[in-house]
Length: 348
Image (cartoon, rainbow, N blue to C red):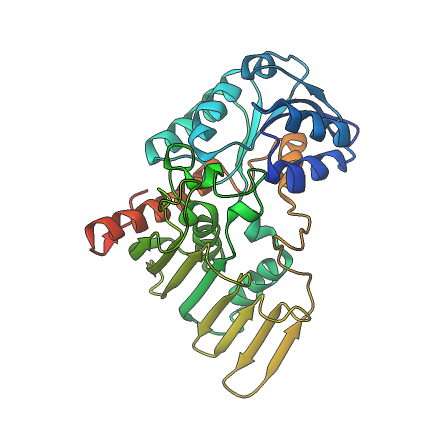
């Protein structure tokens, strides 16, 4: 199958396409970008100039291209479901950015559309493919720290207005009608996916404070989505812990600590050894296994590679639509908890 070429179309030429999808697709020996559409034509032209592909004038033009096998949906969150379903109906495989949708109903429609079309649907939860997290899951499964009892996982930085192509307070990330949710959709959903995958157990209950503490839009008003979230989660295996997401951290924080009956494991705190294990008996193990990607240091995500492999090998993507739905469900439960001021059951 290696000689086959997967031809891609891109919906969106913003930062996630610039730093992740386009370079990783272009560098893959069995993939190429053939077409790009972005409402801001200059962005599509800049991306095409660097990685190839024809700049198209509309969504319909991209969907109609017979030479496109797969489409990357890298748009504001509110458009994920609509464009993913349209692409699947057009007979294309789809790699959709996270969060996959703005409701469980839409997520289920996306999954159903993929099944009906007989096409692959993968969601871009890249945290679980990062080497420290892959190593951590292996160690947890091997029982190195015993039974996992508690955890804390965080993802925070200075805000998307510094990283987005919409530099400044007018960024789409700050607008509820485009983003639906703020830091919980941008960063929290990554950790929701990561913790259930790392621990091999589903989140059953969630409690959360989700609020706008500091960020202001271009009019100087509080943004219409959250800029901070502090959540508590209980998993089916009995483990419980804390998930935090923030757009107001001075320094980026992408650290996870897992506490077990035999010891604890810290991920992402020490750049020299991204996985550190300290056992009750005093034993210490440090693993040099590659880093966790940050806004300052973009490392290959592995997402396009995994998606291309699933297409060429005709296998179900590891990060399927169903996996994306489960991460979204945790985010929605946290939002509901913040709104109702109650612990809520996660609905899948």
